Length: 194
Picture 1 (cartoon, rainbow, N blue to C red):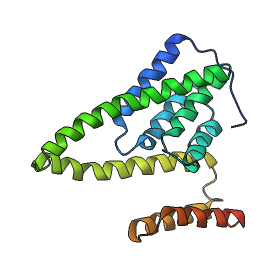
Picture 2: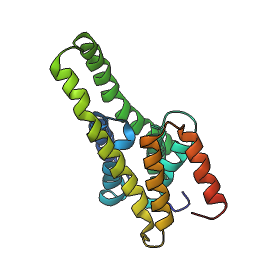
Picture 3: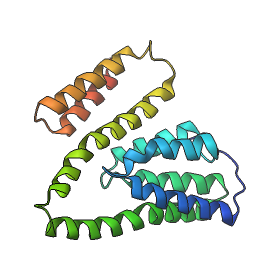
């Protein structure tokens, strides 16, 4: 996250950021990471409040850190705030993005879970659960594609693409804990094989 911007954000910009994250919260079926492509489009491409390296580092650091993976949203808000001035504005950005992403989905999840549990035998409830699985998988693939395309060297990165495909197949077909796969990827990277 060494490359930064110098922004001048107004209160209306912070309000739009909050509203955007509230909307993304309602679309984050399968977790907040599934909305990363839209976050990238909004924060990096449209508003230019974050750089590509800041965006990717926010996700990478949060995924590597222990705790909930939604922390990448806090890091994005932190970076927007830091780009707008200072650590205190970074804290404001973190608060705005986290409350925005958590409040609507938490409320909706609570209410829907209560209703769904009460009506779990209804055909519509069962169909909804089955129909959401491919959507979540597609959104996670889109997130991976956005993160991988930042390299702009697909021909040179064939080993990474191969490792990604092999890992996806292992996760899909074999019951092995993901930490073992992360450790194997770290070892391959350490030895310079990927």
